[in-house]
Amino acid sequence: MKIRFSLFLVTFGLTVMLVGQKNSGGVLISVDETVPVFEHCEHIEEDAHAQQTCFNRFIMSHIMNELQWPEGLEENGRVFVEVLFDATGKITQVESVRSYDDLAAIEAVRAIKSLPDPVEPAKQQGVNSNYSCIIPVSFER
Image (spheres, rainbow, N blue to C red):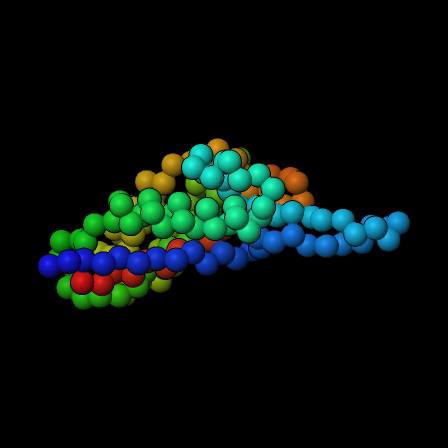
């Protein structure tokens, strides 16, 4: 029997885009906001969209390799896990915010907690900042 897991990343709080603003001289300036950078993604330096894509793919790949079907789990469903990275880049909180089953929630949280720490924290306007995201994890047989 083949088990399929799927997940995607929905971010909130810190948007990942270049925002154009005018300074007092009327010159357009860019204020960049970035996600935490994992070692696998540190080669991407200037493109916030590419950093976001690499961040999402790295998390998805890591969790897809780590996640296991919990013994006793009877049905398919989805778990939403919130992850908080602090301003130093460390993962400080991982918790299920909504789940269809306690066994699935425990496994999703365990898999996400196994993520390595990023090599660089998220930045907002060039300053290290906290970063929070919700990771929906689907359990399907």
